[in-house]
Length: 325
Picture (cartoon, rainbow, N blue to C red):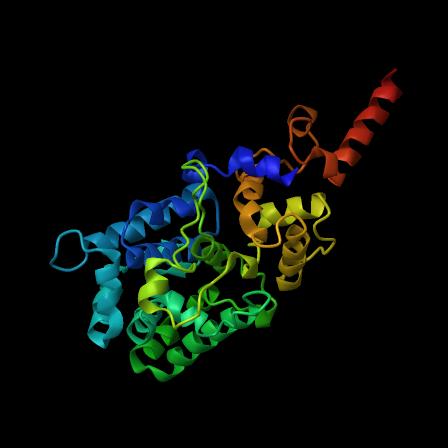
């Protein structure tokens, strides 16, 4: 059932409906890491709005400084000093994505720049908190967020920025607070899943997977992020559909729900439970799964046999038909 859905929608022709499209435009792994982080944290709101905001942010970065077409990697690396952060704030002046402003983007990339400076890559920083035997990324994500929040308190330049823009905290969600951390789980899925299928299946980047260029050059020995440790990103689409097909009975889409859905998906693929995330999300993003039963749509769905929502809708439809007979 889920494998049929995966085969149908986990394909590159659907990248245009997902922020994962943006890091695919780059080949350098540090460019990809930076752009993927940007695209992930801005992935709230409708698809058109997300695309406009990511495009606008990248355009500002490419036009920054004296050098034509500054790369994301070069721009982020330049934020390790207070002067670079000040210049970056002017680059992102007037930038707004819903309730996050340009200063929040500068803070995010300032933290990323320090992770690069101290660890070589954000991936190396993350896996420094990841026990290879850990069942999932809970402890590691908490550790990364704790480090970044500590830096915001102890680094004078970052602290000043953070005080001027409290909305930056929306980017720094942690499992310890109960949040489902949807955008971070999505980012980690992009980083941890190395796909080896055909060209129509390779969507996730695998930048932090064993044997990747970033891992080989920057990770501590024996460290990497494995697909089996990922937690599914629960948004309104995947959360609602997961409830429909019985992957969770929780009504609140928090960290407990995300882990519960992930555990259910392990029954389908113990080594790669989040592989189904992109396909599940397409059902909602492409309006293939509505909030009302539509027989012309639901009858064609790969998940029909497991969908309690569709069964209830079909039963109501039959009762209505009998009443008219």
